[in-house]
Image (cartoon, rainbow, N blue to C red; front, side, top):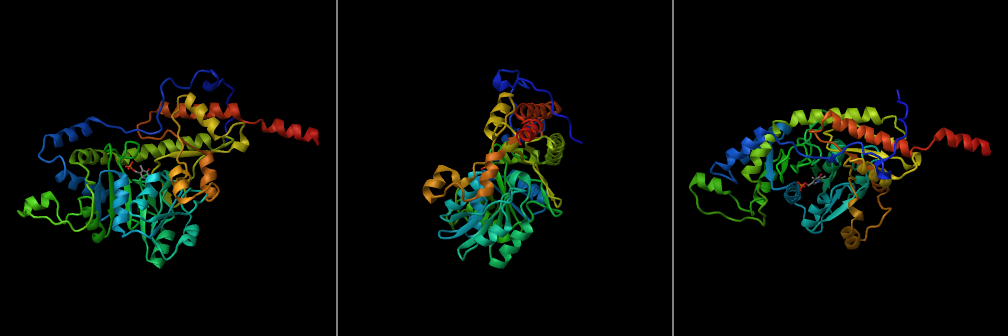
Length: 416
Ligand SMILES: *Cc1c(COP(=O)(O)O)cnc(C)c1O
């Protein structure tokens, strides 16, 4: 049943008292004593980088997502770069991706001199729509690069089917989706390659850090070389075998993740399940509170999917309120709720508009969503009080801006 709207209170943006005193960020890491001890141990060891802790983290990560191989990178962006390289993406090629994502998803395609081709998203999940992707495939297409927006996997079976028919590689930007599931399978084991990030707002944090998972040995080898200057062996392999010579076989980068960061990642990974459970609990509380709030559309989760709930993006239906998304967002920030917008569609960034001539109106579903989206605070370290504060603030702001539908209807019938 829907609750009755709360009573009107003066908004903080209009000089009222904010719902909370200190700003609640939209996302942040949780670091405990075990994490600190794990890092200290590596600091006392022989290997600060390229050492055994990196192997250990990669193996534990691969096993957690049920993939054969995991290759660590210095960031999620570097991992994306490695993945498009391993897929053989090169100048003249195209990669079909979502416009509603962080710029790094499309930028990695540009790093290879290839062209990102956007496919609009489905209104329900805000993930790329396989039917639209199919229409974007040309003889130049080599990669499909879906994003698991907010932690909700894209329709991967349909995309893998398309890839199969056209000889393409599916690289999933799973930076939002560590721990998610699709049709009973784990994100990281489904696409040809899956890319993760360990930025502090993500499910596990290493400061900067990323990972690519795959079941293909050739991709794994290519990824390892690419992150290490294109060398055929790494320093520890040479140490172990007594060989001193190394050979550069391709043009790579130094994208290695340090053992210091890997120690933190390994320790954080132990808490992933608890983090995911807490995020799901917060999402359920939000959805129960907002389901019947006029003007607010909570995110949905398809039946065959388990979201990792990286974000909790609500959509503001301005037609139901006397305020647009921008006003609601500013009002919530004044209440000290650190809301955000994910994302300005990539093609509308100045660089993309100026370089590729993109215009507003080309991807209407993503653009309309962008105008409505607000990401509420969502991180595993949120307290009960934090969750309550977000719910109170949203209710307060919506109550203030809600149209009196009955009054309007009455007015309309008077006039007729
Ligand atoms: C975080 C993120 C990235 C990049 O990760 P970094 O580790 O910050 O480089 C890429 N794509 C998406 C969708 C992300 O959310």
